[in-house]
Length: 176
Image 1 (tube, helix red, strand yellow):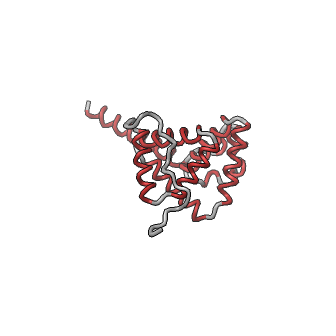
Image 2 (image 1 turned 90 degrees about the horizontal axis):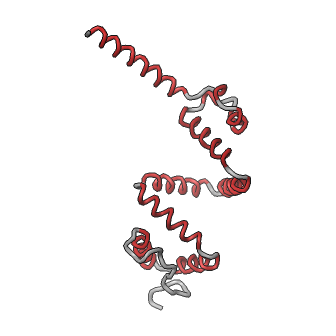
Image 3 (image 1 turned 90 degrees about the vertical axis):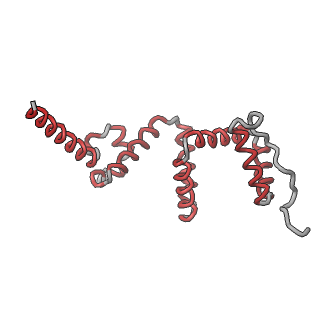
C-alpha cells in the first residue's frame, strides 16, 4: 500500500512539475488561433522569447479586440493615439494610478465606476461647468466635495450625487 501511495505521489509530483514547466514556457506561436496570429503578427519573430505573462496579456488584448464593434475599435485607436502623445512622465503617472485602482477592494472600484458613469451621463454643458467649478475650488473645498460625493455613492446620501458644487466664479485667494 505504501508503495502505491509513494508511486502515485511521485507520478503526481512529476506531472505537476511538467505542468508548471509548460505553463512557465508560454504558448508556442503555432498554437495560437489564426485570428490571434493575424492580430499579433508584429510579435511573430519574438513571440517565443516573450515572457508567458506578456504573451497572455497580448492574447487577452487580441480577444478583446476581436469582440469589439467597428465603432469601439475606432474609439480604442483614438485613445491609443492620445496615449502615445502623452509625455512619458504622464504615462507613468497614469500607470501608477491605474495600479492603485486595481489594488482597491472590488466594492470601491465599483463605486468609482458608478461615479464615472454618473458623471458621463450628465449633459456636456453640466460636465464642463462642474470641471470649471472644480478648478476654482480650494484644496479644502475639493476635499469636502469628495467626502460628500463618496457618501452619495456609498448609499449614505440621498441616491445619486447632486451635481451641485460650491459656487465660485473665481479662484479663492486668501486676503482678498
